[in-house]
Image (cartoon, rainbow, N blue to C red):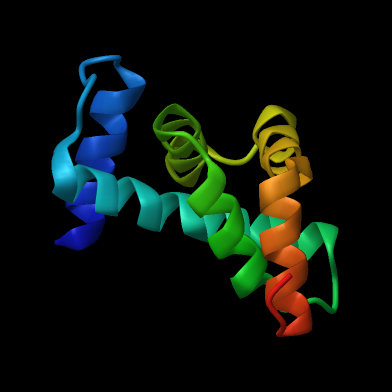
Length: 107
């Protein structure tokens, strides 16, 4: 049921039908985006625990970026999606968060 709802939210976002997806839509989009980001991080940084890095990327992405990444859960990850994820990770606050999460210390 949750997957069906996710497909509906992402489908509407793809169609440009939604400007504000609401709290539940935001949770679904973030969940879908986390799956995509986690897979990309695991591929780009083998041997690194992708979970804290993924959380930092999601927390520092804009709503529009989260929707763009969530779309990849339905249509597949392409180079543009991977580049967007890497760009978000390269932001100073995201990089600081990721380093802190990987090292287990507050920076």
